[in-house]
Image (cartoon, rainbow, N blue to C red; front, side, top):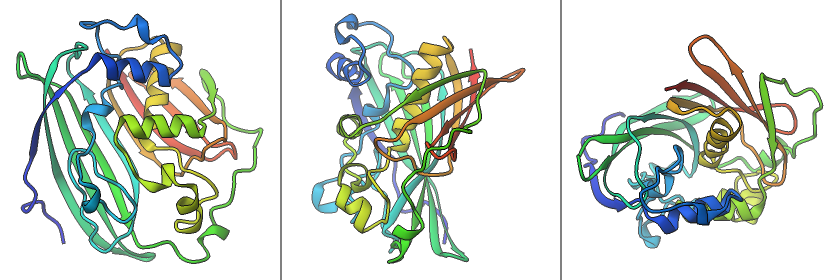
Length: 281
């Protein structure tokens, strides 16, 4: 099965609120009082404006509300973020009114050797209402899977530190804790239980701890780009290849090529968990 005919675009008026921008700054341990209305929103900080509005009674069983669009269950109870692509076409001023359009761009079900699965791509456009031109276009692809096998906890082991993590031209280490996961989830209105309910993450999905939000990983890489590399992103694409867990160090690396940067996020055990391709202005 594939197709999106039954899904209609959802249009909303959003505001790039000063209070929200200041809370993102506080979450990142930056001085929130340095932000003023009319300042340019740092690129990557737009995620709260894509938050879902799914009623609690209509949430998926795993608690995921969708981002701007409710994602159907289709009998597949597990959901992971496969990747995202973001194009920055213009800056968003803090305080500006925005027009958001969100839609299911593609939905494909397939039968894999591990069982049925589905791929759902949600596309968002954020336009500054004053001129109507898109400022940010983002596509997020989610992978829907069957319920975890009862012995999954034996296969998703806790991370064992590895000293042989590949280095890059630039490197940094971050350690996401429960507070950071909570604040990011709250700002994005993301109630996916693998990020906020340790018992669910462990006993239902078989993870050793809370899972770091894929969007949070993207934000941490974006902050690495902004603060360490001093670059202005124009396009970025992220592929998530393994989970990252709360309380474990994440090594962020960046390698410069002729026309782009390649960035990675490595788990403490040396496994590459995310890959980012970056084009700059």
